[in-house]
Length: 80
Image 1 (cartoon, one colour):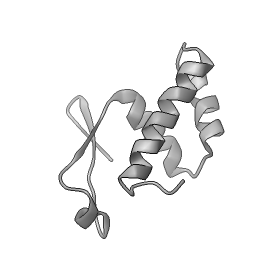
Image 2 (spheres, one colour; image 1 turned 45 degrees about the horizontal axis):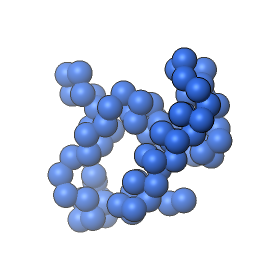
Image 3 (cartoon, helix red, strand yellow; image 1 turned 60 degrees about the horizontal axis):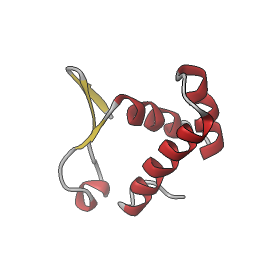
């Protein structure tokens, strides 16, 4: 994942380059989730860590994290 100007993108490398076409554009929240997942945290831990930074209801954070991780899993980017 890299920041380019005001945007975050994930660049597939290695075997992922053949699975994912192009760059993956991420908003700030998705980039934060990505960074946390790089440290091998569970979904629950991701929500807890986000709750420290975002003034959002826990249910909203759970839904956002789950939607993002499910999309990554669908694209074979993340093992669930």
